[in-house]
Image 1 (cartoon, each protein chain N blue to C red):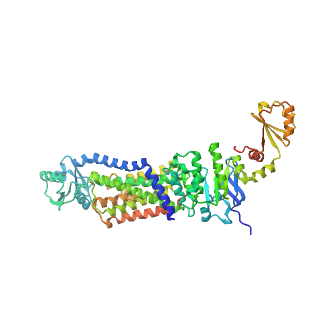
Image 2: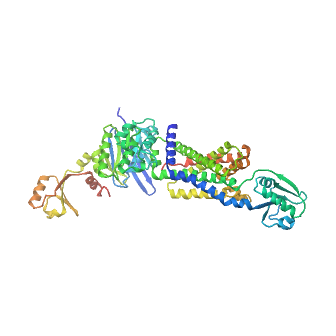
Image 3: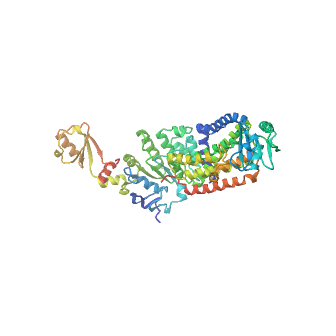
Length: 296
Length: 338
């Protein structure tokens, strides 16, 4: 007998007067996978996630948790970290954790959650006095208090500095090792590439691509990008037998044969002092699929 | 269920108790008002002579008796003899006069002003009247005012303490976060009601005790009755706040709506002055407001020592308002804005 997916979104639609935010989205999320929803602002990813969290009723379609409609069991077994959440004023981190812990029947070991989220030094601190990164760690801890089977993370690192973001990724990787199912939305392609086993890319309320990051890139690209500062690119694009994209500050050369491209540039006398070679990224994929920048 | 309710209740209580500014203000504001009013009306209470004349006319006819020509005495007519006698007993009126075949005057022998007025009546050499002696302790304006200020403070505490906070929680997304847990709406709402009820009773008790000691406030009736009035009154006001806060997510709009409720109650419920003599329509409208019933019942208990039967109608009205508004608020309640 085939095991039902942990989450099954079936033809989800969300319509507002004059706007269709989500338009017939279907996908499944399997046990222990990290599933990412990518897309620009207004693509419908947060609306989709909120319908999957059971916080917003779809206009049509349904979401099933382990083969059954969302219900009390799902509420007990799901952990959610919202994009932005205010907490009660005048409570300490410890009191906030106790408050949320007491809302669930089955809870994780509080000391372990505190240790995982690196909150030990902050327990006596007022919620209002936390930095952005500390606050996100507290919100993640709240989402983990019921030892959830499914963890939703809605743009968990938006607004964090690069160091805090990388620290946060380390936390998520540690949680992944406990075989938890994670559904996350993000703007950051590096984040999705590093954390997600499977992604969907949404635009205008629809799924425009689905698969693992590596599969999607392999399916859409077979080239590599050579990047040069525009000031160093002193030749005409017509002199190269490759696709060349000229920007204000840099020039990108797309090639399936990096050696041949470099030889040709050397022949033309182009300085390679600042040459960078990079593989195709999810940013490129989005541009390819939609013709727009991902963070537009 | 109890565990979740207690968790939210505890968190809300801690939030309030640690917010020293709002905690301090909710105690300091009414204390200042009571002291200011006591000071402002102190002199007036010592000097004003008030004489009611039992007559169906709107104004006293100065030619009806030479005493009515006395200067610096406020003569006015009344159509309710029993009420006027009661006020003489409470020193709210210094003398009551009835002319005609059964001419008589009522005076409180414990009242210095009543004694002086009686001497002035004899000196006026008008038609004789029989003397009716009334007894009773004086009711100072501050005795009458204190229930009004305590009730007004309860009103502000309940309406803004619940209505504004719930809207704030919704606006900032805290309600949405709670909605993502197994917490039910009824558990959250009940916790807010109980928390505010405890806070309101605590602050009102402190105020009552403090002003009673400092101003020697009159308390004729039972403390248990007064507690029941306070509990049912706070319950009705909190339920009213929950209706306002059930869906609104703008603090500005909530502020406007709450003020729309506060000001009619401030004016029509008898916080500062009695509505006796006001139009019937105004008095009927005032009876739709919870604060009116709170103040009527509280004054009846504190000033007149009324028993349960005299305040039953007020208690029933408060309970009905509370449960109807609570049902409406729970029905309309939404965790998040649309």
